[in-house]
Length: 141
Image (cartoon, rainbow, N blue to C red; front, side, top):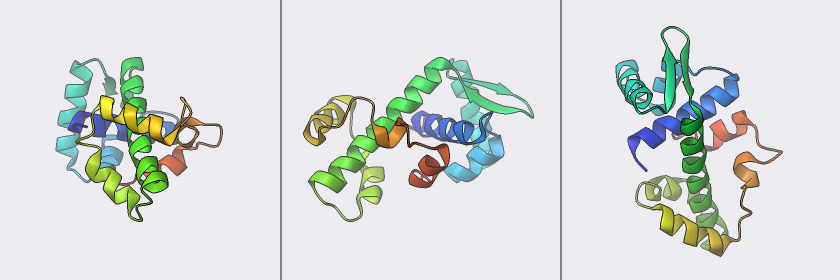
């Protein structure tokens, strides 16, 4: 997982919670970076076609950005559930954060088969999913 994916996840969760654009300040606070750093990455995401930014309005993900953000959140969910349910690691969230940057899609898919997770993970995006709950769960973004 790279820095762009961290921003995509943060934008996704914040825009879902607000039901609208994520402000640069919210992103900076969530990711514990300066507003200038947040603005710089937002510009990069916009140039890649992953986000749309309106000055003084905030940033929203494009359709492609949403897909990437959901994939990144789902990968984290897979790692977290594997650590918690299969390995029974007590500090599974902390370990998942450390591992997500080194787990590629192939490994995540293999872990997914071990935990026997439904294709559309209910913990990430099911009927009981709320943006606030996901912000709390991934507050480490």
